[in-house]
Amino acid sequence: MTQLLSLDFWSLVGVVAGIYAIFSLGLQLQFGYSGLLNFGHVASMAVGAYVMAILVVKASFPLWAASLAAIGAGLLFGAALSLPTLRLRADYFAIVTIAISEIVRFFALNEQSLTGGPLGTSNLEGPTQVTEYNRSWVAFQSTVQGWLHGLIGSHASSDFTMLVIVWVVVLGCLLLLTPITRSPWGRVLRGIREDEDAVAALGKPVARYKLQSLALGAGLGAVAGLLYAFQFQFFSPDDFDPLITFYAWLIVLVAGAGRMWAVPIGALIFALIFSGTRFFNFKPFTYLDAAQLAYLRYMVIGAILIALMAWRPQGLFGKREELVLE
Amino acid sequence: MTELLQLIVNGLVTGSIYALGAASISLVYGALRIVNFAQGDYVTFGAYAALLVNLHWRGGMVSATLFAVAATAALAVALEFVLWRPMRRRGAKTMGLFITSIGLAFIMRASILFIGGNGERSFRVDVFQSYAVGGIRVSEPQLIAICVSLAAILAVALVLSKTSFGRAVRAISDSPDLASVAGVDVDRTVVAVWILAGMLAGLCGVLAGLVQSSFDPNLGFTLLLPLFAAVVVGGVGSPYGALIGGLSLGIVQEVCTWSGFFGGVNPVWKPAIAFSVLIAVLLVRPQGLLGRARTL
Image (cartoon, rainbow over all chains, first blue to last red; front, side, top):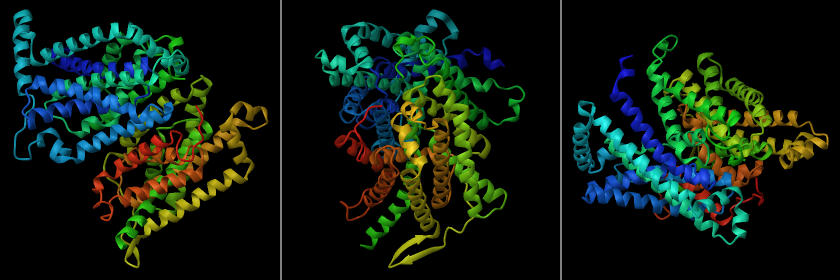
């Protein structure tokens, strides 16, 4: 039970929540505002993480430049995603986007000379080299830790520092998205979500709006991918399994479509479920091994998805009249 | 040339398994308008049900298959009563049911992992028995997979086109309300659709497990996307479409690795090839090869 009181443990939960919050903000824009059923959102995270790591390790980019390039690559990926998909009806759109995210994962898995293959980033320069893409990040993080140390003293561990950085980014994304989604541009997106033909009849270029929404959403996914790469110092194609997309779906559906500021709450709920099963250290759960507890976690996630659809399809904070899942 | 023929035969094997699973998904998708992401896990359930008979109860493969087919159909019907019907009564529409199926997929896969463990399993059969005709090798499980799949899909197609049940299925897929007014017992037809779809999914699981020689609880999930690709390529709702979609995806996947095809694509890319075919087909025909243009 000492874990329950440990600041470092809660920092880790908060970091995971923050990264998923940014990731899910992208999906909220695509699905909650524009009605696009992107089931391959995880690909944007993969694009962000891999572009950054490859540019740093193979092209010796400075970290900030590689990170900017990675976000740019995410935006481009989202825009490119719209080309084969925008003419499709909703269910086919969902199937094709998940297929594209799998193609991206297969690319990372199979193009070993570029991505390191199944061994992930530890193999970026071949098996004998020690590869690090995050050296400047570690330096930056310890600078921030130094500032925090001056403010709050010894509680400022490196995990706590990461927590602060991630949530500053979350707040930044929210402050960026709020005026955008309240602007005429955001209203057109919501119009497309409600009735695409009506918006088209008003002379709005529907396809262009959808492209922009997909691109911006994927850009946010790339930001989440960057933070994911910095937090875990290593990643491989397994980290971009299609399941990850559905974690974002859980978060957005808990929050409710079109509710930007509820997304971090959904992400916190998700992170609690995700790390909460470790507190099942009382009977009857003590009869289960660690793997079985992990499976229990997936059952809980599945049950929440079903329960939401049964009782609150509009999410915890959504409005019934803004229900997107027709 | 032998190499190409061998690849086509291999493609027929994979393709006939795709076709079975695709027929199962397509039936539910077309008749009940459920895009069921959990149906891959129905497939896994079938394989593990057969494993139970074959491995634990020391039964033969035929009785194991029959048990698996019956058990998966029973599961599909049970889920209709505890999940799908209540969800429909609550007014869930296509996309709500789509998300529900993802939740169900999480629960089913975790349950199978929970009970069966994540290790590789194999049936108690001789996988090395094989036949050679003119330099082309086919193993016994492969031959069985092709024949059983084709027979099962043709049987389902006949049932759907010739019987009054088939007519009822087509009626509810057009409009459940109109079908109901015209005297079709919608609830009973829906249950019958699940029985048929469950049987196909269970059979697909057993055959996939046989052909792959070993499998784990991800069997159905890895099959799921190629199955959906086959459904969409073939056109939703038609068993013949599933057959054509499944076989063509299976064959294209294998033939791409032929050395005569621009030197041959590396076999590690096979799953990505199926997805690329899906995207290419939808680029040309957004409603699928044989699909009608309709909105959900």
